[in-house]
Length: 185
Image (cartoon, rainbow, N blue to C red; front, top):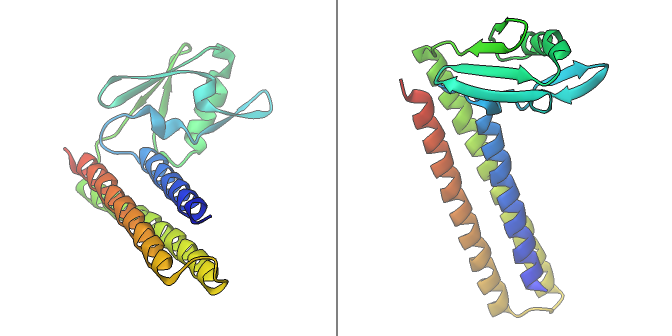
């Protein structure tokens, strides 16, 4: 029974880390990264469609993204969706492909982005600690109901704490790597 609690907690912690990685991938660092377009939805024949399903996205140069739609009729809609997004990039449409030139990040913008990265990292840690608290509460309830002993409770809490520590360290590494990527000139 208590293995289920540990397993569930571990899965939730992994999901939290995956959400953090996905969130950080969407942040624009100095170089072009096709993942920043993942959240953009295009009104394609009246149906909101993820941009990455309408064509191929490549980064032929460090600060350039090229979107090659499979249906050239979608170019205008893709362009509109990019302009409406929070990316702050003007698309270049040549009738066949759309080019996005990533502007150089200012020092101020880099510092803002590192604050955002730290905040997202902190939110992920809070989520991990909340998962730990829930697991510990479940273990204490088992102890209260006399389904596990005092020693089993202590061991279970130590295991959950170890899981928590490991995931918090992983979050710190992810945040550190993203900050380094942003501050890279």
